[in-house]
Amino acid sequence: QVQLVESGGGLVQAGGSLRLSCAASGRTLSSYGVGWFRQAPGKEREFVASITWSGVSTGYATSVKGRFTISRDNAKNTVYLQMNSLKPEDTAVYYCAARERTATIYLYWGQGTQVTVSS
Image (cartoon, rainbow, N blue to C red; front, side, top):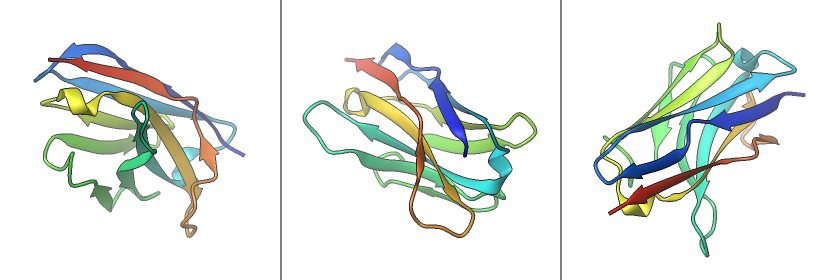
């Protein structure tokens, strides 16, 4: 079983940038595909970005495409989410999650990190 811990959240002005990290322990993250999700107050959790275990393929929600970049460093057992041109509507708790290589369901979740974008 893999444990995930997010970090890098904080308060930033609109137009600014943040880089979130998702660090894994327990098992090597290279065995897992990883996704980032977010949940704003009063809203359902939504998909943000994903990356396959190999890092070859990535996917993004339409709302963040061109502004956010997901990447991974398997040597550091960490996945990143670089967020640029942040908007107030990006304010949410951001979670990373992991799924087995061939699975479609994310079984392992971190505790989340708060991102607040002020206007």
